[in-house]
Image (cartoon, rainbow, N blue to C red; front, side):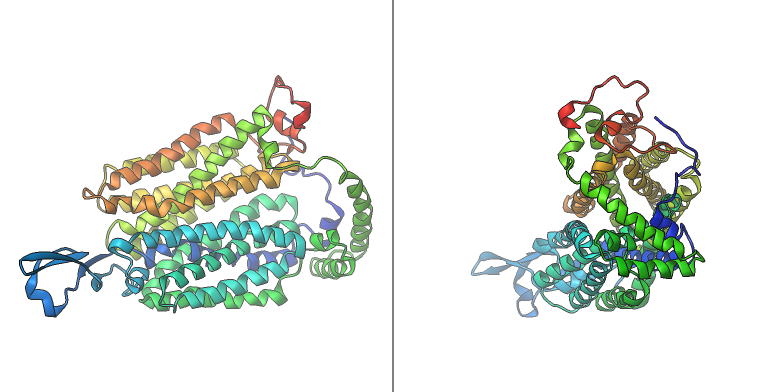
Length: 521
């Protein structure tokens, strides 16, 4: 394993020299792009306030109330000619905790329809997954800027419409479209950011990029408290995305994509703007254009070489084990992070307080990563985050009352550490030739896990004994297994990253004892 100092990032490529590593031009764009994560948090985590734990009673028609022999919250029985007849309740009185009206009250998602609220959140996560995949392809084909703007427009329109439609089916479709657009904004904004900053800033910005997401999570409680109703809340989290449409003027296209697409003059104009704002000589722009033209000749020759797919992650023994271990850690992060965010609103009547406190602890987790990411190994941070989160969730089975909120908040902080670290670690673990495939596989694992979260988090409500302890155990075991699997992973901090499949197979090995099968290279 070849080590290097933290400042030894090798020579800058010509394009980076032309626009600078980090200057006023990058700072403005980085701040603007990071703001995309605020509505991302609103879309993913609002389920806590729009579909909280709700108690209700059946409104029995006054004309037959005298003939009712028995009733519960979902049905009642009447006696007709000495024969008992059962009736499903169709009108309810709700006793909300939080918003005066919610997704549950607007669409009567109780009794036989109660599972529909979980499907709405599951479809949201699947929509984000689909958006990640499709907008990733669109961004490679049409550039970063246009797909980002298209996703923002979809997000605004679908969000506003979902607040006013009275039909659950249409509402669910609009939620999927909104989630689909959210997935696009998440991916494209991050890719664009990474393409304009210097390599030595990428790990730091990949951490700080998550801060607006947590701020968005914290603001959910405040917005819900101020708005008071489902309709007003939905408008409040949808309208701000309209301001992001100003990105048409604020955000440039990626100069790297423009050069790769052969749009030299457009790339030149953006590079000259960046060079001017960052006080870099314009001669370096011409050098970057010339360098890229020469590089294209080399790349055209390289295109005749092997191409790789996701299957290559499993063809060699070490890389196969590492892929499985890190993918499981992504699954755990998606499962537990969103599980905790969903579960915290079901603890007691102080929904807003619980959400705000747990989100504030998530911000603390990101700050921990920011402070230690260049001082402590990635694996130690990941393992500590997983172990603390797992223990916190298991402790929930034996504590009650106020202590539960604080224990869950500690778990949220720990999972925030794990989720932030696992993304950076994965980008360093996989070889260059399969890096995108590896991260895509891991992202799919996290999204699939997050789709089942609502069903697990609310499973205690469907049992007579209200077995919330079982929910805590299910959420708590996963992080501990994930921490144990980190034993099979190599450290990537301050290491030369693997380029080929063979590099990935031998990465972190002191003795290269396992030969790489020639067919798997």
